[in-house]
Image 1: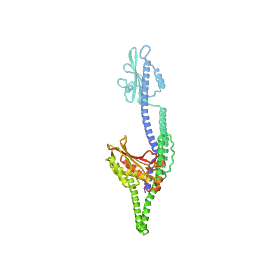
Image 2: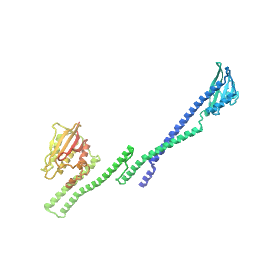
Image 3: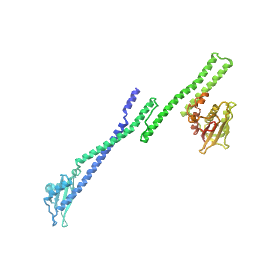
Image 4: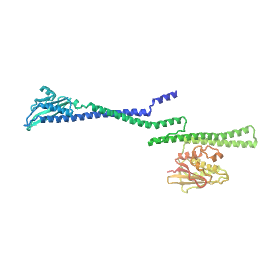
Length: 472
């Protein structure tokens, strides 16, 4: 049922190609249509203004032609032909009326023919504008000998003034449709370009979710962002594959390390219980079983501490600590737990007081772990020398350096020693443990606001550097 629900949810989703092309088409289509409407309205207004100017020029020409050489009013029938010629020349519509009135407002000429009453109906009372709001009028006075002999009025309907030829409307409509198609084609091609790498990444992510980490993506792309996306995903897939392999090795190693003392304890206790060994030998077997149980307990504790600290559920104190007495006490207590052939670490401590901000128990855990590692790594028959130095750096941190003269860390392992469950080949053959000591110590240092790193490689041995914040 859950599978069917997830399948239905996936079916509701649309592809990026459909999503963006449809929405972009709606947006660009709406925008272009609104632009077309505004532009069409503006063209109509401009056409009306231009035609009104043309009508005013025609009215002025008729007024000039209506004056004879002696300056008297002379309205001739030839005006009919003049008006028709001007209509064809200026592409004026048939819905135009030309009226010539005398000095007293009497009707002298009209085209088309109309009566005095019809003229009064078309013009307002002052005979200088159209009576109907659906018409506009352009006029010109007839002047002769310095007197006004009459006036010419040219009336046109607003509908004819705004008229745009069908050819122009068709061309404009084709242009808008072409722009919409071109815009849609552009976003369609861009969506395809963007969808392909996303589809490859989605397909690769689906394979990873199915447990297949060996992903090979074509990371070459002209666009920097897409190239970085594909490259980052390819690197992530590689790291996941490496992590999965490390996890498998880790589980195998942990299982082996935990199984070994359990098997040993079981065999030793079984030998004592069945009476295979008796007396002092039986006591010796039990002592070995206790040691193995203690080792097993430490490994389980290390594993639990590491998981708790990695999950951030371990409380870390930030107390004001005097560094010199703290380090002296840590070294003193550590030396009590060691055999006699282990030399006391040489301390190089400043004379002036130095106060740290941290957790004394966690600082002890870090330093003790580093000292124990040096003891465990020393070569047989070698006299181990340990050095612990405390100093202050200019960045406001206390720097604790732990150095030994042991065999050191091979170059190929220097980058991996802080990895969880990592153990070098030499240690794997001689020591038993989970390989969490350095990892746990680095996490503890980071939780206190400091750090733990491997120092520069000396001529012999190795150096670890702990930085902890000073109390300010």
